[in-house]
Amino acid sequence: MENILQIENLHVKAEEKEILKGIDLQIKKGEIHVIMGPNGSGKTTTANAILNNPTYKKEQGTIIFEGTDITNLKTDEIARKGIFMSFQLPEEIPGISVTNFLKYAKNKTTGKPIKIFEFKEEVKKYMEELNMNSKNMERSLNVGFSRRRKKEK
Ligand SMILES: Nc1ncnc2c1ncn2[C@@H]1O[C@H](COP(=O)(O)OP(=O)(O)OP(=O)(O)O)[C@@H](O)[C@H]1O
Ligand SMILES: [Mg+2]
Image 1: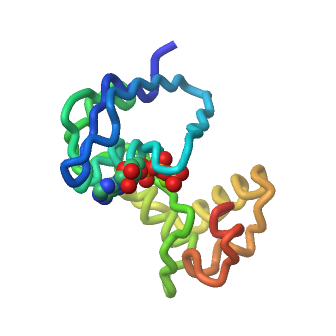
Image 2: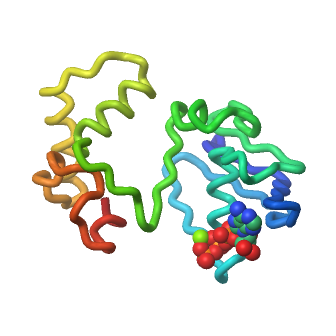
């Protein structure tokens, strides 16, 4: 089966220090990968490199997502292809509800206007599938959650 994500021989530097020294990773549709390793081994750097955070300079290697070379695309272009980086301690954004954030993200990735009622029903369905409390849909993004619940979201 075709790879969704394919990383080949990735070398990444930050502040003149070589952090990733030739990473290879293949992820196929439906697979869940967990990357484990000691503190400072480069897990977060790998995620930043996939999203092309400009702090991390790619010296060598390629990243292919769904058949497109995304190695040097801008972060927003990569995000619009559907790659999202979540954080252990995400920023709190009062005034923006979870629903509005997801609706905006979907609009930007599909390029189509989103009908709010249908969209809310769709989100609710996914939240039920994931055993998440759908009341949280209307709360402000990451506001008032404990550290653990921020991660679950
Ligand atoms: N912006 C940066 N500038 C300089 N060095 C950096 C930068 N980001 C990460 N590093 C260094 O790169 C190495 C890998 O860090 P990284 O955060 O990717 O590791 P990690 O595997 O995610 O660790 P942890 O398990 O602690 O989250 C560390 O030595 C870190 O100090
Ligand atoms: Mg990390």
